[in-house]
Amino acid sequence: MRDAIRVGICSWTDKTLLRSGFYPESASTPAARLSFYAGQFDIVEIDSSFYALPSPDNAVRWITCTPRDFLFGVKSFSLFTFHRSKAASLPKWLQKELGRDPSALIQREELTSEQRLRLFEEFLETLRILHRAGRLAYLLFQFPPRWYCSRESLAYIRRLREVSGPIRLAVEVRNNSWLAGHNRKLFLDTLRDENIAYVAVDEPNLDWTLPREWPLTAEWGTIARFHGRNKEGWSNSRASVLEKFDYEYSKEELEEWEDAISETRRDAKNIFLMYNNCVSDKAVRSAIRMKEILGMAPPEGLFGRQSRLEFDLS
Image (cartoon, rainbow, N blue to C red; front, side, top):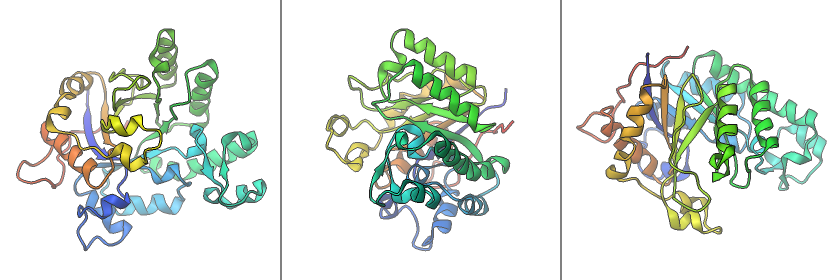
């Protein structure tokens, strides 16, 4: 079986990363920064798509300033995962139909089924460009901690598969009800039936968080996302996003994943290891350390073009 491991981060445009010194001064535009990033890694996760629908022009620009074998993961728009969205971030046609103040926070339930479907179809327009070009690694649906396993939520996951066509889907749930008792089988069977990847997570060990498990549910591959282990930040409901994800993995902590990665490689066509501890250049440094552990990075320096294993896009 052909297999591959790709390592990347979850936000190449993060403001704190821009201030960290990771990008050279010559990389002064988004295109130049993405091009530089693509010299260090061969995959990135687009998270700006969580806050607003990316345009087809975005997809074309992403493709043109990266190598032909560079891949993109895309995070789902907020309303599709039961998060709120500012009215100003919605397409003009939907803003007009809703008639809400631009600063208002909109919930999915405020949209009609026709509006939701049209919005999702517009979102897919951009993803199809990446998909047809062979550049789309996956579409990630990261649900909020308050979204629990239920018959309705499992039906929603199946509906996402139905309306997404051939695009590879991945689901990250964020409370341990999904792997508790009988729910575990119902949830994982649903993912396997629909060929959707379960997203393994590295995160603080709290009463409600998920165990560090990595079941394989999709034929095309699997994903692990590393959120950091800032237990104090995650325990504080008032902590900012920066406070929650401000964490840099040590070499020893990353080595804890070696056995799981080795075992997963035996059965998974493709493995994506994505770092979401995006404060300053901590995600970059954690990702580089993992590459070194896996023998994927040149030992002489922190930054350098990633050597990659063969990748199967079939």
